[in-house]
Amino acid sequence: MSVLNFFEEYINVLISLTWNAFGAIGIVALFLFLLYLFSPKNFETIWLHIQKLLANFSYYHRKKYIRNYIEKVTERELENINKCVNISSKKLKIIWTEEDVIDSWLDKGFVIVKMKNHKNMHENLAKALLAYLPHTLPPTVYATIRKDLGYGISYFIARDISKDDPYVVAELRKVIENKYDSEEFKELLNKLENVNSESLLIRILLPEIVEATNTVYPNQPPELNVEIEKMIDMLNEVVNGNLAEPVLNGKYISFAIVRVASSEKLAFSGIEPHLKFTQKVLERGVKNIYVLAAGEVKPKWAKKLVERLMKDIGLRLEFDDSYSGIYRGKRLNLYCCKLTRGVRA
Amino acid sequence: MNAIELEVPAIYEEDLQRVLNKLGILQDIIGGKVKCFICDKEINLSNFGGVVKIKGNLKVICEDPVCIEAAIEISEALQVTK
Image: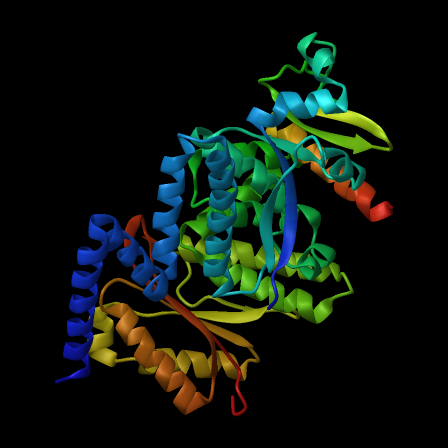
């Protein structure tokens, strides 16, 4: 008997025992227990739905659901972002203040916001994210780069956390446009929007900014802001498809992007041209390499390329991420990875 | 990495009247005597956005996100200078 058969038989016995002892309720409880054990994230989602249902019946469950929804949504989305770059370790925690404790929270200097009932979760999430906005990036980033740049990027992180909830997006946009009311800032937001549309904000822009600010902190070199603006312009052009071989080799920010070629080109010349390009930019002193690919086949070629870059050139893989995203207006399978100079490179 | 918590204190709308009564501003809000300290809009129970204490004085904010964000910024700046 294989391990799988034994496991299947064990589960069957467990189900029949549960059914005989507790009936349908027991089966549901067993399902939730197994889900909790083997897939905690799916369990959390189902549990939130159960809490939402219970919120219709009691005051206690309404408060519990509102708090859990905001905390879980923000935590989960931050986890996804932190896979590529460690931006924030701050976990958002909703504290219900009632009449007995409100004075102590006011004395601590907190703004205490009103949350509406469980049918207004877009509004509630927007309010919580307003409080979170100045904490989305590491303190070294806020301390080092220009305020409008930091705030503009924070806005997109908050949007990502809300999964581009239209209500949250509109409310947060209103706030930041009011804060930095200039044509230049609107243009910056439009470029960041374009960069974020292909998910390059958290996969290239932020890792580079975090790395650079960690290096320069506590100094605030003005050239860093210039390089960040150059990087935003460059990534904007990459998304627009106007740059074939994007390289930025500045004093603080130094990287190149390798976009895996079309299947026809790959069938004709393989991945050798990409290897040569990478070798060439590394010789010029570039520090980091990002490999991007979109579609069904190209991500597979990208992974082969990454293996060769690590084996032949000695690059070190910092992260790789396969995800579903928008590329040239279509939802496709995408791949992005960051490689840095290893011991040999 | 250990997660640090960012606490966001909140009042649930069903608790609002009790909390405002405790703070002694419920009747003023019902009577239309309270204005948003950022935008000067008249506050009522439905457009009440939040409350903050600045230099010992209670300030009320409307639910416009611009006003809430401005109040958060002021309170964080004051907490840093404390």
